[in-house]
Length: 135
Image (cartoon, rainbow, N blue to C red; front, side):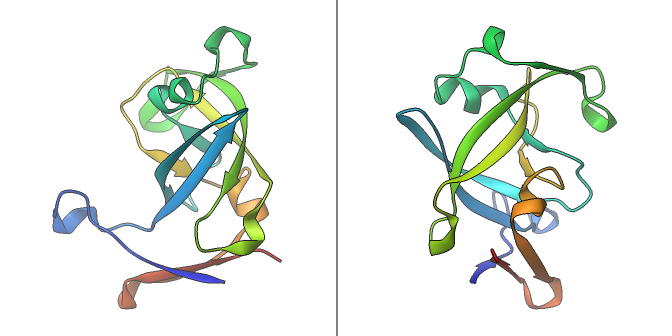
C-alpha cells in the first residue's frame, strides 16, 4: 500500500485532486504522467500527446468511437500500455487500457475500466491523501 497527497495545479485551491504518479510504457519508451483517479470515469483516458510520446501509431489502434461527457464527439482509440506506480512494489507489469483521445484538452484519467479493476483506492479527502494498493 502506498499513500499519496491530493495535489493542486499551479497553486489553484480549487484544483486539489487525487493525482497519482504513473509511469507508462509502450515497447522501449516510457513516460511519467500524473493521472487523476476518477471513480466517476467509465474509462482510463490518455491525451493525444502522451500516446505520441510513447511512440504509438494513431492509425494502428482500434477505434473506440467518440467519447461522451465533456469530450463528446472526440474520437478515441484503444491503447494498451504497461504501467507502474512509483513507490508501490506490486505494480510491476500491470496492463492498463486507455481510451487514447485525439485531443490534448484533458488530463490523464484513471477510471473504472481498467485502473479501478486492477487497484484498490481509498480516499481520505478531509485529510488530503489517498491510498492505493493491489491484492
